[in-house]
Amino acid sequence: MKLKILNILTVCFVTLAVLSPGLLVFNLIWGRHIELVKTQNLSCQVTNINKGSDSLSLQPESINTPQSPANRKLSKYNFFVQLQILVEQYRIATILQWLVLGTPICIGFGILVYDRYLVYRTAVLKAQVEMLERLWQQSIEQ
Image 1 (cartoon, helix red, strand yellow):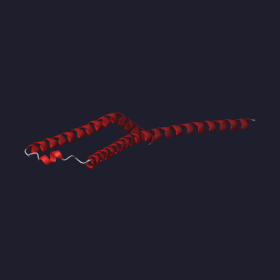
Image 2: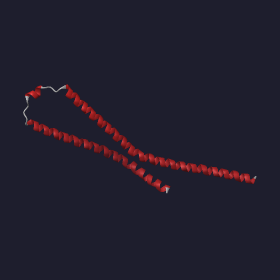
Image 3: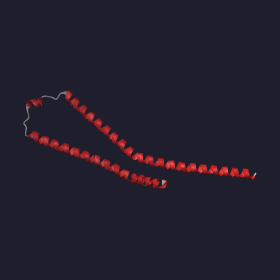
Image 4: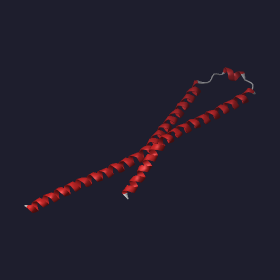
């Protein structure tokens, strides 16, 4: 029974080791693809806005009024907050990826180490029993 479980876990571990680089690359490429799609959507929106604003005439008051510094600081603040949120999400995603990859590996190594420990304890016990049997035989012969 233990041998079957060990064989199954070995196959799972090797499969995970073989497939994990591919999964990581796919995840990376998929993330870049999503960013590209978002960028294309934003460029299409900007193009549509520019086409719509060409038909509007410029008003002299809007050209001469400067943008207030408070609005600029607010937009920079919002940009940095959004950037921090993205960095935080990226860190969490990276931690989860390593956790997903590391957990089966650690479980597999734990099972292998425990199995080797049981083999070691059996060998030690067997050696102790043989030594006691020899001592008992020597005490009988005397």
